[in-house]
Image (cartoon, rainbow, N blue to C red; front, top):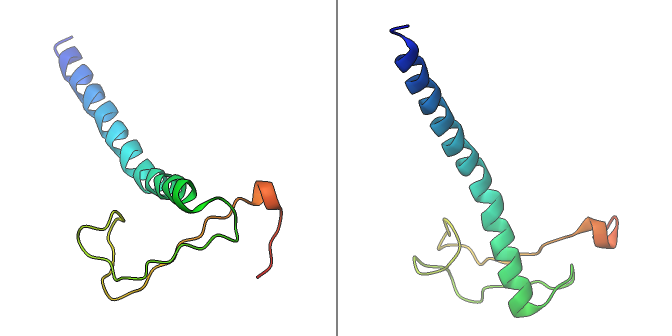
Length: 87
């Protein structure tokens, strides 16, 4: 029974590690959802809406890990609404 405290401690650490892993795995998906929602609120919704940054990004741009050498555009498709698309 001397190991019961160690078992509980290891189990608590295991749960903490799983919570951190779940957060890290969901972070990029949540970020894309947030960018999509912001884009749709600002520019409108639809696969034919294509926001383009006319200036290069910098450290103040609210996009994760922007590359300052690229002109970005972002489009979000919802195939549940439109069905298959061919471009």
